[in-house]
Image 1 (cartoon, helix red, strand yellow):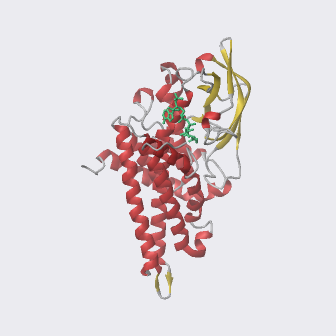
Image 2 (tube, protein in one colour):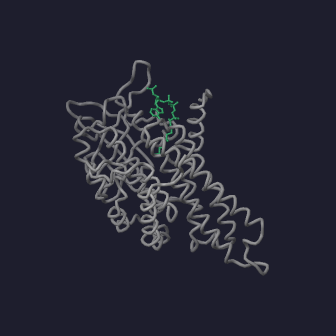
Image 3 (cartoon, protein in one colour):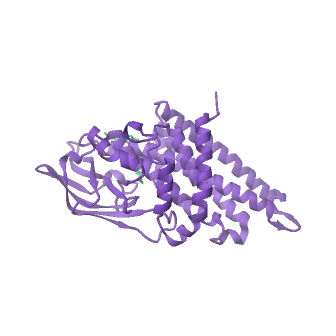
Length: 385
Ligand code: COS
């Protein structure tokens, strides 16, 4: 058994860490406050090669393995959730479906600019009344001659309404199967297509410097060639995409927990009460020890799930376990970190305040913790509805 990372993976970690410290950390608090998506840091992240990390160089990607991608997300999340969200959503959910299921023509048309970070792409699954119950999506696509006519409404879609968003992958009902269940298919819709509007969503508690959108389709017509893969495969495609996406949410939990731990350790060693640094008190030192232990366990769980994926082995259960555990570890670490900061931890001047808010998304997005438990329960043979 070899737990060491390769030289390339270590170099990647160090370069992303340095970048995050130098370019993201200094602006993260202000962007969060102003609720601003930064095109400046987006461009810098693109220059560093943070988009298309696991995509073949044939389509303009970096041609690395999945664990490298996960390490990059972890390192950005160690400093800021919003920027990690932009990177994770783009790689896993924007680029992923086109790379995995697109035709050669679709890949050549969209991937090079997505991988260079010139453009972004959204993943249109969730609807106002179809969140956890994703099969219940109501957006329809009806074939009219050579065009799909799309009508419906999507919500909470990351990266879908920036100035550089090139389009979205939309899950649509394209018919009804013999067993009465909906036939669901994915269709690519480019930004600017008449009948398609993307509106930015404001006043979020978390990831305030990332772009989140509502999508509206009103008799939106796209060529029938815009279908992604075979008709009727849309739900499988989205679920398969989410298996990989959940690893990146887990990476955000792991990186965020690490950021909380480091901030808490530093503060506890500096802050004096009762005549000594507060880390002298066992009640505080034990919190730090628990944080460190859980972070190590989370890292092992996540990296092993990535290893399974990189070695073409089944990993859906392990991805759900990693997502569930890492997001809950960050929950406990953010809570301890704010507690150790006392009153200062409640102030925006301290990064742990932002980490505490950003954490909550991780237990909800890309499948709630309850959904992860359903996925895990089904994999281990429980007859869980
Ligand atoms: N990969 C490929 N296919 C999958 C899959 C996966 N990981 N998980 C499920 N499927 C397939 C099933 O095999 C089934 O296929 P058939 O209809 O051909 O038999 C189909 O998808 C429907 O699956 P299932 O019957 O299990 O659907 P359910 O409605 O019972 O529940 C859950 C599926 C709850 C697991 C799913 O809806 C889910 O993950 N919901 C959360 C959605 C989510 O994460 N949203 C957040 C988006 S943020 S970007």
